[in-house]
Length: 531
Image (cartoon, rainbow, N blue to C red; front, side):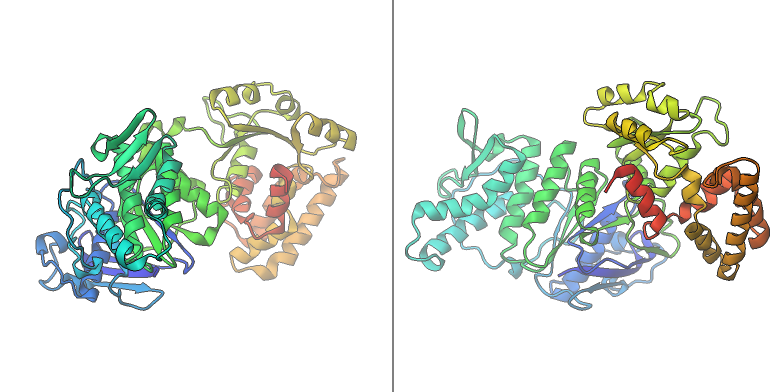
């Protein structure tokens, strides 16, 4: 089952919240935003709706569920959820974990019959404790007893069966902690608990795991056991990253997605950079498999509609600031492209770092973890005059640094030499050749509902280039003609606040039009990043 949309009226933080546009193919939905932004409240809404739809009953707590201006009534009536199976949850269609999952130790001395997981559903609110390790131990031991005497094939050996039930949990745990080996459940009738090997320590108890190991084991164990009873469900986990370092957070998310049964969907509420980075990695592999819902900067005292966000540079920077606060500026990008343009200095000129700013606007959606830096003219960039290319990889291990220069009048032999030195060259004369391309100027006309003026503007561009050639400039030197094109564009289209000069016009008006679906974008992308 997969949630596609939701509507909440006057429920907890929300006066009127709509969530729409989640792809049917989304296996992972990430709620991003700072503490107190309403992520857990959305899970509370799902929980209330599920309990009402599945016959478990709703906890009527007006001080918890209602806003001050709500009329008394059933909170579930103010919540609607649309899934790919209809507008109601079926029993077994939702499974929720709160952020309060600590089960620090336990032992078992008896083995009791465990009923169906669906017989009861105790969780009612996202503020409640949600320790399941002890319960899952009893369920795993009880299931093993039933399997041995009822379900397993007669030819299955005890060793084969033990390997089967242990391996389901051991392998994903081992991918997170290579030196931690889950070995079994011990004796459920005599101080029974989960047992592990680690280095020279053999068969030590669950209680001796670290906080991070327990947190990961809990979620993996729970999903492995519950997926039998929830083969087609929406799994919601509030703050799955608790007690874990950044690297471990991402690895755990990957395992949880991999363990999802059938056509199920995982929703997480997180402000963890590790979780976000992994989600971005999954998104890059398949855009339709991950949806990001951004709860940041929303005024829930007003009607709000949230649509899935592309993980653009702005979104990613917001996530970084939530996760790291003032340390966000210290996080290194994956790649740095050193390009031409006047470097940004202490006293910022309005056109400083002009090329870099354009590139970041153009590639913000597809390459949010690439930073562009203007570092002077072609000779200074090629020669690494500022020493950026030499220093950055030493500051941040694994960072890739690329040097990019304009084509200008470089010969083919020059370009071959640059390539041999690891320097990338644009295939067109300069960035203006892409921005003032006929396709982008036509898109400008279309963006303001003046497509009929496109031929007039393109004719004005040709005239401006002819005038530039008469002044002794090469015919492909669009930059020399850009001032006249800018003036004519303002006159023909009646543009206002489109930039105070041709450089501002290029950055603020033309660069945002170089979108993924344009030929110019694909050409510029190939020139810089290759095929």
